[in-house]
Length: 100
Ligand SMILES: [Zn+2]
Image (cartoon, protein in one colour):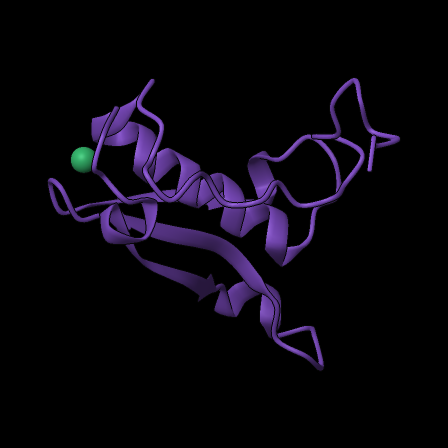
């Protein structure tokens, strides 16, 4: 049991925009996402570059958030639960067809 809440530990999630890339785009797209572990005050980033397959902002946000949580609380399940895993092929588990 824990009384830690995910939303209380991972308090800030922000996207960063790479000017070098966006110079050629009409619509700016974030190049990476940073999430803050408020327990120790460290930002943890996830970048599109490092992801194996094409992912969206939702997925990047999820990865950065989980990294921030695992920073000081790895193996601990938050009181309010982990954020929902974005629905994309790379993450989908064995029971992807659902049981609802
Ligand atoms: Zn930390």
